[in-house]
Length: 341
Ligand SMILES: NC(=O)c1ccc[n+]([C@@H]2O[C@H](COP(=O)([O-])OP(=O)(O)OC[C@H]3O[C@@H](n4cnc5c(N)ncnc54)[C@H](O)[C@@H]3O)[C@@H](O)[C@H]2O)c1
Image 1 (cartoon, helix red, strand yellow):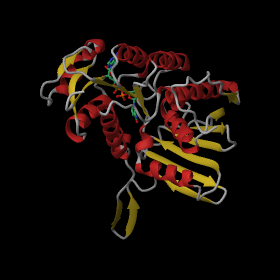
Image 2 (image 1 turned 90 degrees about the horizontal axis):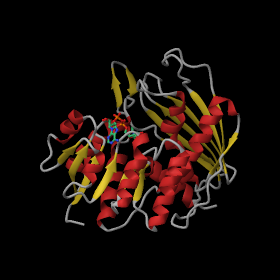
Image 3 (image 1 turned 120 degrees about the vertical axis):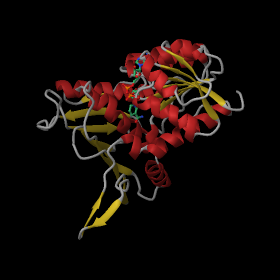
């Protein structure tokens, strides 16, 4: 590795452009060496303020560009597998945005390819693990003060969903975050999922099943429920309450400014995940850069990406009339640390 890690960013949309800015202006020890997007104008725009970054329409060409030592994948999920395998073939460490792949079969191919290499190269972008609130909740649960966790109650609300958003994406794109967070917080696998469909909001786009109510069962007997509502209209809210045998803890309430004016008080609600989780993205990318420069790979693994895909897939089957759907995971390769079970 050079003094400063040269990163190729694949995909220069909403997340990719923000990661380019982060690598350039926030994170230390890294620089953007290449930007790729089939939409050349987007790639050019994201790279406009950078010194010495090459710009590509072909993502694979960016991996072979001068100075590239690591890859940040921020293309849409269907493009992730090809990019991950291309990075593996070159021995390049990768930070790949979630979901790792659109389906569990693709995710398993990624896991198997990395296991064949015999060393981890991929970190998956489940950035909630780097959010201060989530990290505090994790250490509280691990410390045992609340006793054995019994339930997690989670809320995931967006102001509105993008035009391409489908009913399945409420599970495999949005609730994907709760799936990873629950596995991580509770240190256990999710074993079954039931998705209930309240009457859709009149404000949701025609045909979109929004909101949804998702119930996960876990290998250790705790339950996890998630309200996911991606056209709530008023803000971006992600909250989680853990209930244990001896107490409860709640995170995610404190992200807006408290305003007192004209004889009343209100708390502002962030409108966007880039605001709500800004610190988490910064910490995630800094941790990835720091580990990569030390020749290490930390954070959520390809196995975590696979497990999230398998659980989400079961959730989508449940959504489409499957009732309670069990989750069957493939055997975990030795490369990946076991969960607590
Ligand atoms: N961690 C999070 O909180 C979070 C939030 C939003 C999105 N995401 C994830 O980030 C990824 C990108 O989402 P987005 O909202 O930025 O989407 P976007 O549509 O805004 O941007 C995607 C960009 O990728 C480009 N692209 C398409 N195919 C490509 C390819 N093969 N190689 C390189 N670029 C390609 C598109 O032209 C587009 O510019 C998705 O996996 C999404 O789920 C993560």
